[in-house]
Image 1 (cartoon, rainbow, N blue to C red):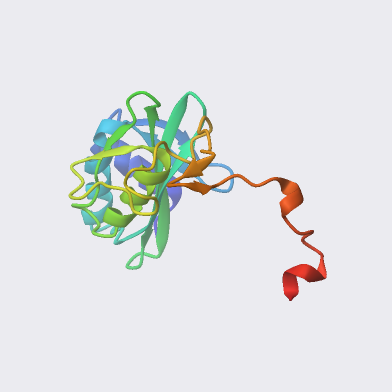
Image 2: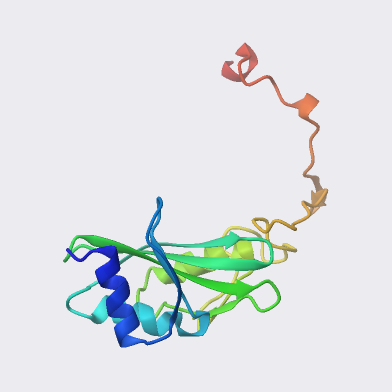
Length: 173
């Protein structure tokens, strides 16, 4: 089992300058890599025999205001270690290379992140909405998203007075 710093050093050694930031403290130690190189880094993390990240746990998008982040949570069943990679992209150019060629499971993770955050995964084999209707406008997990009043003739807004008190007996009838 390699430590976080050992894995980060291996990535930096293989791809000098690709790591833009290293956060080794806190709940989720991670490296931030150049967004255009994320596929190369992920390929290396999977195929290097000392690292062997054979499992993509999740891909998530995070809205940080001026920038969006794509977060890759990786695990190695062979080596019993984990690692987190992040890539930062601008709101206007929210694109990263797809990692579906590295892990097949990325196909669904990337579609969900595209659907909810609007991040484009270049090279994805079928990048379309997965949770929302194809004609939905906007990306609901972005901080600037404006929730629509209606969709397809159905009113989507409700006043809080329409909802029962969470502790009331009415919920359990």
